[in-house]
Structures are given as C-alpha cells and as structure tokens.
Image 1: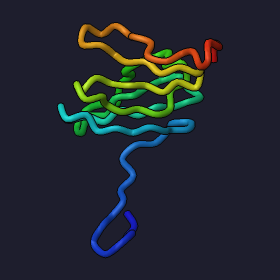
Image 2: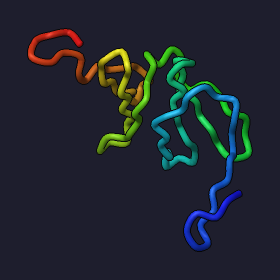
Image 3: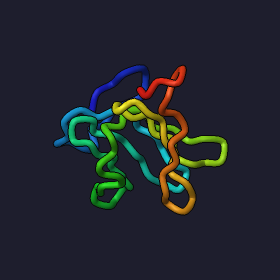
Length: 101
C-alpha cells in the first residue's frame, strides 16, 4: 500500500493481466474491467475468484452503464455495443458517415 493524498491509500488487489482498462463498479457489488490484449472482460467480486465475464470482447477498453443500468462497451474493433437485459448484444454504433469503422 502507498499513501497518495492524506489518508487515501491504494491497494493492489489483482495481478497477472496484460493491459487493463475501463474499470467500472457495478451497483450489484462487482467490478468489470477489460484486458485488451487478452480480448476479455473480467468480473471481480470481493471474496470470490476473478472470472471471465465476456470473451471474446472485441478488444474492449471503455466500459460504462447507460441510464437503464445496461453495460456499454467501447471496442477496439471500432464499435460501441450494449449488453441487453436478456444477455444479447446490440450494436449501437458501427458506422460513421456511412462508412464501416
């Protein structure tokens, strides 16, 4: 642990990943994060083993929730997707000015 500002401390809780990005805390009590080169989104829940949430993830990096609490994924393969309540994936953006990618 190391002191950052005042009493704030940083603690390393996981290791062994290649290049992580896009962490987001999910209100149900777990963290999602992307490992871009591993083409995987992982799920970390305190006290449990880290598990694969989505693979392949199309080399995802940015993760966030929309106003309905659904997961939005920014993919390096040049699209933005959403995981629907039923678990299916919807493509929200894939074209720009009528061009793919």
